[in-house]
Length: 226
Image 1: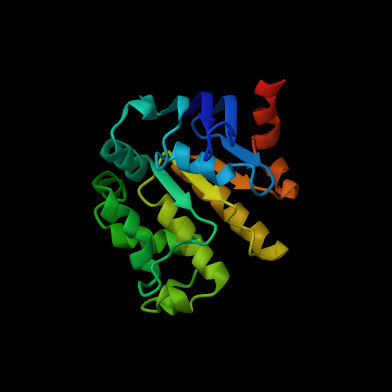
Image 2: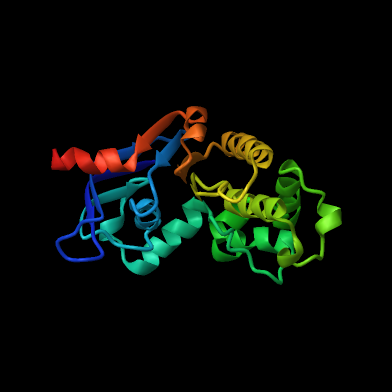
């Protein structure tokens, strides 16, 4: 699914933020990536998603070497194969829940096709499996939804069209413990249902036992230095 080798990235010359000898993620696997603020977690996700380009090294996604692709090709790969759950959710505030979920299909005909003959019905089903009362929120702008509701919409948007990889960037940081646990259970269930790998980034080490593997970004950055 994902293979990283000899990756380097820096915002300032001579001061590498990321210096990773290797990192991998298998199909259907869940990986917990931890590290404090400023350790490069979000930067790494942007590199994996093809938003940024590494200064050296290789990132292979589903057999594609990202460093060999043109920007438009990386954009297509990201839209077709990766679902993102952002820390701030990044919903369109004036779209309702279903229309926000369908944004992924609008950017990717492949995911629209995989969502079935009626993507709107698939969006509704995903929201219902995320324990949302779709009739209650139908027609309401996303800005009027609670934080927990917005989070579920963001997760459904990431999952529609069965992407091979779901990336979640600190998605539980604004939630209380009960809401966080419910959301994680739902996210794991839906990733398993879709056969998607999950790359979950957080600084909260209390969550890592739920994942197949965990990696400390600071430690693997140090590995090269030692």
